[in-house]
Image (cartoon, rainbow, N blue to C red; front, side, top):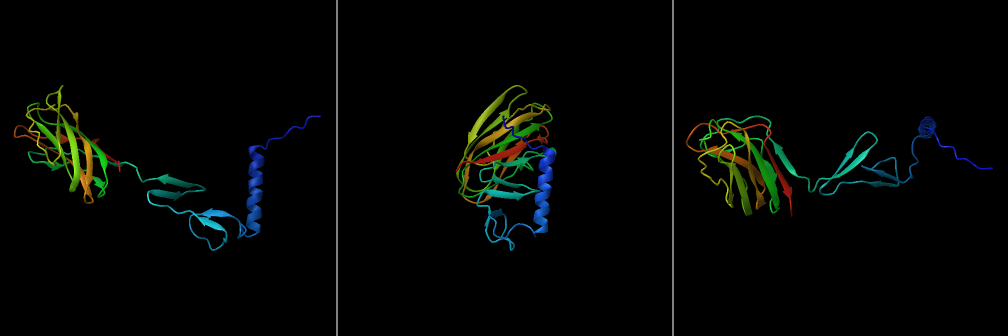
Amino acid sequence: MTNKRKEATPTEIDRLNRKVRQALASSGGLPADIPAVTTAPSADLTNEAVLTAGTGISVTVGAGTVTVANTQDAPIKSVKTSDQTLIGTSFTDVSETGLALLANTTYAFEFYLLCDADAVTTGIDVSCNGPTTSLLHYEMVYWTSTTAVATRGSSAYNTNNGSTASNGATVRGYWVRGVIRPTANGTLIARTKREAVGTGPNVRAGSYGIAWKLA
């Protein structure tokens, strides 16, 4: 004769769970000395281990769940939700692209700016500004026509490319990307301007900034 094991059905499991809950309710809950993991000290338990979040760790308590996440090396992000138009001939912060950086921490960063102007004869310059640094190197990739780009490197904020042409009214992506180590807490932010000819530039919604902690 072969013994066959009967698997519990979901209905039977639910019925057993209800019985356990009823038993706990009638007895006043869990025994005080039962081993348990909690997110805060409990006056009703004597044998619990309290789960705490260290640096760079988050603990989120939900409905029947506890989620532990590593936030130490999560990228810092920003995104532009509205257009910024007719910025002019002086370097101006691109609103909503700021990245809050910590002192004595090395980051890789990039800004991707969706830019246009009134005509291809209007040069568009992009750069960045931020806290004091012990290390700063970045490159700017900018359009010199509707089909061609140029690249320039810098180790100083607000570097002026002096571009005399651009993609004009066709929106194109401009890059500012590099590595930075601030010596003070501060905000790294993208900047842009145009040369003396024409109107603009305009930076469109959807432009973004992002920084990754390296060390």
